Length: 81
Image 1 (tube, rainbow, N blue to C red):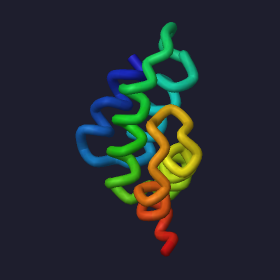
Image 2 (image 1 turned 180 degrees about the horizontal axis):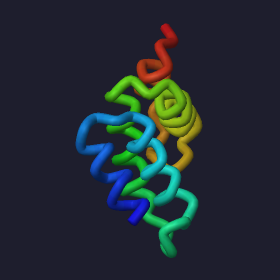
Image 3 (image 1 turned 60 degrees about the vertical axis):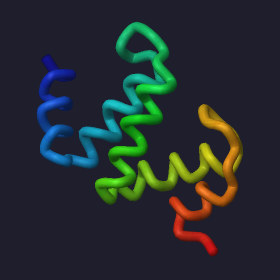
């Protein structure tokens, strides 16, 4: 039930709900680890302006955690020149 509520909110561009869905997938809180789905939700949340998602996603790209290392993209997401 909580997942369907988060998905409903996420469909309305709610960045906090998108971030929460990313966290659930990344931390195996849905019973399984789904890294690609987690990164998809973090990206959607970051694109929706969620600062926490931007910070985490930028960190992931800068350090090659959960994604292929891409310092240029990580800096872009974080707003670093």
